[in-house]
View (cartoon, rainbow, N blue to C red):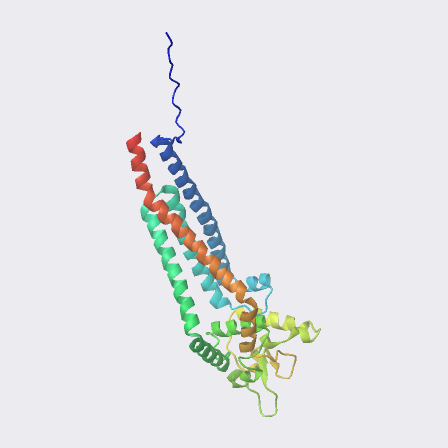
Length: 304
């Protein structure tokens, strides 16, 4: 008698792992990766904010040694010392929220971190829209501010933040005045007698037009004297000034600024996009970590 043995049926359908614990382990590993990624990057920005704060504090405490270290003749110390200090504190505070919130898996800190990044991102977008739509009005306001600063140049020795900033702008952009060096004819402290030629500040000095290195020494030591104990200005001799017919920049800063923006527009847009994408990435990771912490660990507790 013949016996027929049935061959085993082999299924060709793919089989999937139905082990929920393995799936939970993969999700937990993904969350751990995101957590330590946020921690490391925010730790980097915390250290960077600390360095910025230290620079700002250094300027506030010892301006003379900072100018010597940087080696620039014109540095807007009063303005940038406060800007650096405040920026450093804000950067450290935001990075600390991200570090502690990610490492300790605290939803409240992660939510606050996300909210501050969202506020910063919205502020940057708003500023970009305002600058692009109100460009003409902004240019007019900047021109009025610059001409007002030139007119009141060194008239008040206790209020020199705007003047130091404008000296630095002229020094870096290699320009003089807003439209031309003739704008400095309106400066009260630089007005000459009828028999004398007009003066301009030393930040207009064109060192590339001459090989005389004493010009830079004059500018540098003049800046060092300004950051020391303040003294009442008596005459034009108390200010570092040059005759308008000397080796000075003949182009106004409005034209120089337009050229600088035209030459660096790609770099500016790239930096803005990079910062925006970095903020969006951190916001996405923080909100993902914040929303999935309780959900994942509740499911893990049920399967264990």
